[in-house]
Length: 461
Image (cartoon, rainbow, N blue to C red; front, side, top):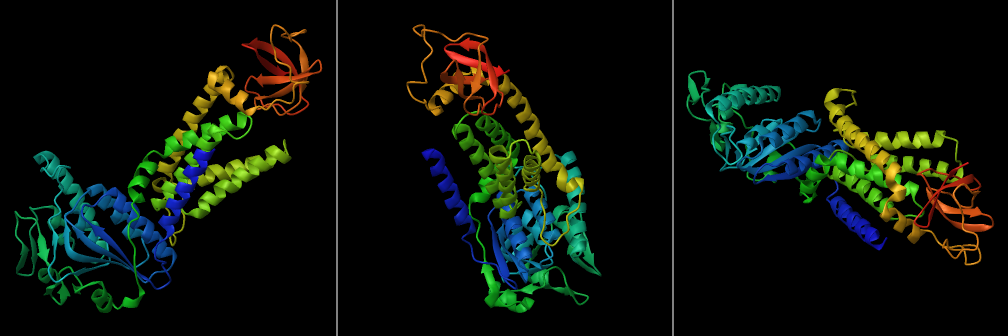
C-alpha cells in the first residue's frame, strides 16, 4: 500500500506540474514553440494547447517555428488539428520552416517571417534522410502534394506553392514571373515570401522582428501574449495512448481480482494505477479533460454503493458501469470544444477498437482466472495474508489432530461475505473457506466440495 501511495503522489505531483502553466484567458494570444524536429510528441502538445485556447476563447494561436522538418505523419496530424480550430492561427517562421515545417505553416491562416528566414523544401524522404526509390517517390509526392495543395487553397494560399514545396517537377509562374523553375524544390526567403504580385503577397503576410512586432502588425495585443512550453510528458503520453488497450485490460482484470478477494490489495492497486495512467496520458495527449475522469469515478462510486449498501437493485450498478465504459471511450475521442460532436467513424472507430480489444482480452483472461484462481499459490497467500482470525476459541486449525475433522459434504453457514474467500461456520467452528470464484453473501448455506492442502472449497447449497 505504501508503494501505491508513493506512486499515486508521484503521478499527482507530475499531473499538477502539467497544470502549472500560464493561464489562458479570453482574448489571450497563445504562443507555442515548435523547435527542432517535428515529432508526434509535439503534435500532442500542440493539440492540447490548441484545444485549451479554443475553450478559453483566445484571440489567436501562434506557432513560433524553427524546424528543419521531421515526421510527415506528425505534420499531417498537426494540419488536421489546425484546420479544425476556430481560433485564428498564425505561423511565425523564426527563422526556419523547412520540409514538414513548411507544410504545417500552410495549415495556419497567416504566415509571418523573421527578417532572416526561409520556408520550403518539403520533399518526403526516408527516416534516415535518404531519398525514396523512384517509384515510391512518385506515389508519395503525388499523394501529399495534392493533400497539402488542398490545405493551402483552403487557407487562401496559392496551391501551386504548396505543390512546389513537395514536387521538384512543379514550375510556378505568376504572370510572366517564374517563381520556381522546374527541377528544383521551392524555398522562399522572407523577402521573396512577402513580395507582392498583382497586389497580393506571394505567401507571407509580412516580416516581423519578433512575436511582439508580429502582434502589432496582425492587430493583436502584445500585452495579451501567453507563452506555453511543452511539459515533457507528451513523449510519455505518446506511448500511453498507443498502449491504451493494455492499460484498460490490466485495469479491468485487476478490478475483477480485487472484487473477488478480501480487503484492498495488490490487484486493486494495479487496477487503480492503470486507470490513473490511462486518463493522465490521454489528458496530456490533448484527448480528454478532468471531467471525463470524474464521470468514470462517479460510475465507480455508483457500483460500490450498490454492492455495499443496496445489493440486488441492479439499476445503480448498471448506470455506473455505463458511465465507466462511456468515459473510457470518450477519453480516446479527439473532440474540439467549439465543434459539435458527430457520430462518425473518423472519431469513434479508433477508440471503439481500443476498447473492444481491451474488453475481449479482459473477458478471456478473467474467464481463465475464474476457473483457476482458487488453486493458484499466489491467491492462497493473498487470502491467508488478508483474512484475519476470529480468535482461538472459534478458529480451530484443520489438522490430523482435530478431534472431529471436517469432511466433504458437510454443510454450514457463511459468517462473512465470500468473494471468494472468507469465513464459514461448521458444527460450531468458524474456519477459513474459499468458493469456486462465487460471490456469496453472509448467511448463505454452503457445502464443502473439496479439501485441498488444508483449504476448504465450498459452494452454495
